[in-house]
Image (tube, rainbow, N blue to C red; front, side, top):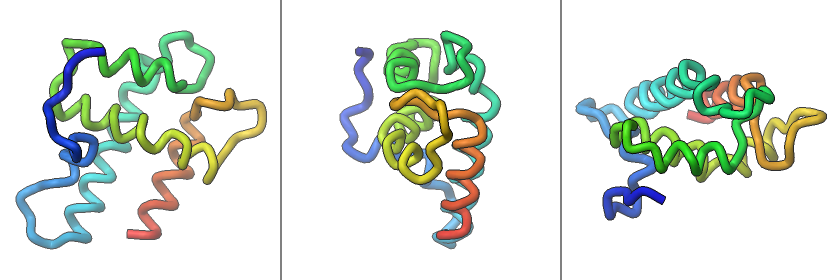
Length: 114
């Protein structure tokens, strides 16, 4: 696995922006990771089965072409994969994967919490 910055909060680095308003920052950051997941869904879903699975997220972290911001997005998805599955598990989904619909539902729920 590619080495990541030695920062225990690396997967949440994308949440830190220049604004001091925490709610606005969290909403903007959440939108940024959501946009990333939607834009790169097909690239992350390497086997083309319609689900981003654990091994595909792990493989993405090894991609040296990804910048740190993108890796932090992938790491956020990886670290929250189980929570996403538990909150919005889709019938017929792999036990370790999420669909576009799962992501949409998950981000909608998070936006309501923030």
